Image (cartoon, rainbow, N blue to C red; front, side, top):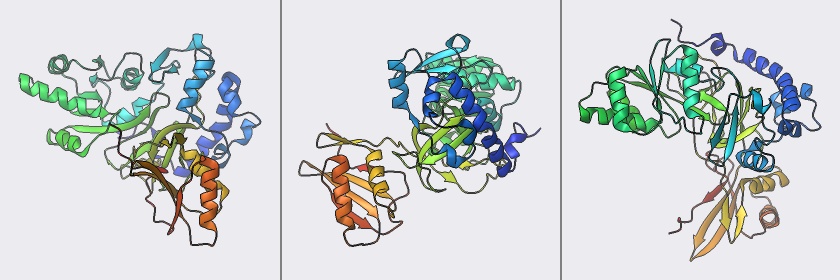
Length: 411
């Protein structure tokens, strides 16, 4: 039995890239025709000309804050849906609030591929411990399992003893849910003397999969792998048995951009994850997830040839309030754009004797007048004064952090 879901996973990278770019213009044209928001994103742009990553990178990004504002101004969905509301399968309500449309089809969030990489096969029973209440997570995992031919126990969240008893009685082979809840169920089953040895696989998401948890499951002989997904995009990337990074889904285009901008960074540099999803019902174009990650070099030892990312590495929305004014990553990016030749920039926010202090650190050689130019730009863009330090190129950490607020938390 093949370890791969389909032949798409082992394509030559150049073949995959050509296929994605050839699909992009038609998808964008249909999105602009069906979604008022997509039409605004593409205003003045001919979709047929967006057939490369360079052309895609010139389009604006859409952020979570945009979704909230659009849906508040234009209910119910802010013109984000690409098909009429009447033809949708479900409408979810996530924190924000953000309302996510789901199109027709068994596996519209594309979880079957990720679950297959975890080891699920037709006939395996899966106990799904993601929520079915308002948010899409429960339906995401159920859709993927059903597409594989796997019966699903719609267990939802909480009720640990009931979860353990259901697992002992119904004998599922697989668990899906947050990384830590499986441990809670297993430990409760141990306390109750229940046999849950049928469980062999786990697919987790929605939380930190810490090394201590991996070790706990490994000691029990369980294969537990993770995926990176959002309510808006579905699966973005998933883990394989190689356990070396997360492999991109075949139905998304992922960019890593400098926080506060839409500008792609070099391979290996940490930045914000931006996703374009080939979803006709919810055609998100350059959706900025707010998450930090980085592309990994080379291919996965498992044989899948798609690009890999390093997983979740923090948040990109690093706004800080300094002396009553908000400082945002896009402000630091504006400084960089105004002064060519700089490397990474980092705005360090600290506190000295109860007073806020800012220091802009810039990777740049000592050039006469450069410190003054940077100080003037910092003041002009943020309306606040701060110090400037020039540091050697390559010396700032590659962690995607643009604003580093080191002040102690209040209270």
